[in-house]
Length: 120
Image (cartoon, one colour):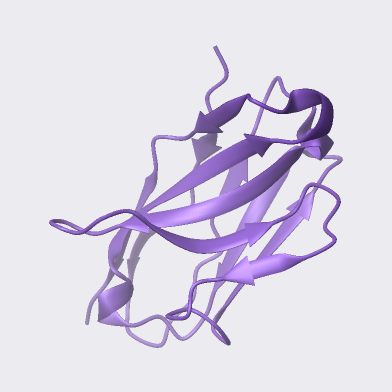
C-alpha cells in the first residue's frame, strides 16, 4: 500500500520559515498532481497549495498567497512546501496528497502529516 511520508515540521517562531518535504515512494510520481493540506484542531481540512503533474500550474489558498511556495522534484518523487513568514494561525498538521492523473487516474494517496507549530 502506498503511503506518502511527510517530514520537516516542528516548532518555529513567528516570522520564521520551514520547508517540509513529502516523499511518495512506489508511484509514477509524474502522473500525480501533488498538494499540501492543513488541518488545525476543531477545523476542517483545507487546501494550502497544489502543483499539477506536469508542473504546468500551481494553486494556493488565499491565506498563504505570497508566503508559501510549492515545488516538486520528479526525479526524487518529492514535493516541497516552502513556508515563509509563518504566523501563529498557521499552526496545524500539514498533510500531503497525491491525485492520480492520466494513466493513474482514480488512484489517490494521503500521508499521515507533519505538525507545524508557530509560537514564541
